[in-house]
Length: 131
Image (cartoon, rainbow, N blue to C red; front, side, top):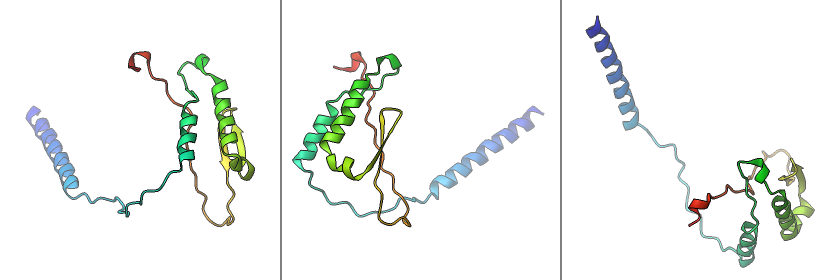
């Protein structure tokens, strides 16, 4: 009885290994081939704005008592001051006091919407890793 169970188990393992090997060898990539994007010029002001933005310590700590809401408000004020046309032309919604959602209404409602996402918080680096 034991040898029959062992034989069946070995057969199942070999069949499964053969199935995996077959799939690996016959796998066809579904990656879409796109032409490379040409290098774009980035304005010095954009580099400066990014440098200013990352100096605002919007850190999300695991312990909620360490959360510094003033930095998140400062970041929102920075965005508003740095990109005034965004605030003039887009509809801004604030969610849970800190998350900013901007809606840019298109001219053709029949088209599918697009979503661009980003985050404005970072995870803290442990003290022992700062070096």
